Image (tube, rainbow, N blue to C red; front, side):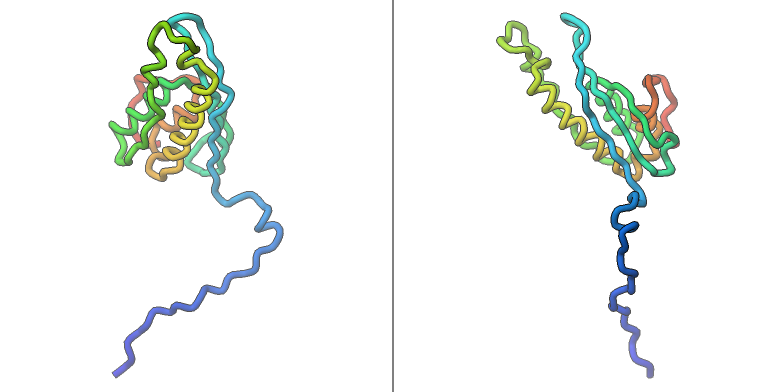
Length: 160
């Protein structure tokens, strides 16, 4: 009788890391920043937009560097599209801040700098969690959101 086979648990022999490995470009990366909030309009047509910049070397994205301007409702649209058409659990967006929309407030409400910054951080966390998911990276709506100047809300959902 032969002895039972035992899985080899020795460490794999790896080559030592040199300077080009340590400081060279990462093999796969996806960086998304949400920054430069700008409030536009007056009165009831006033809203805040954010610059969304993506840098990547992932082959699934046709552009390796893109920069678009989005508002909160665009992030809501992306969330709703992903919830409807994909098989992933979509993280929550930062809250709507309904109390800040009430009239006769003593502050700027949703246009106060601290609130805009808090929302910007939440939107950046949201888009990075979504875009980092391998299944979401195949969704046409994510590519449109990150790489196209305008969002075609009548697009045909599907995979890239």
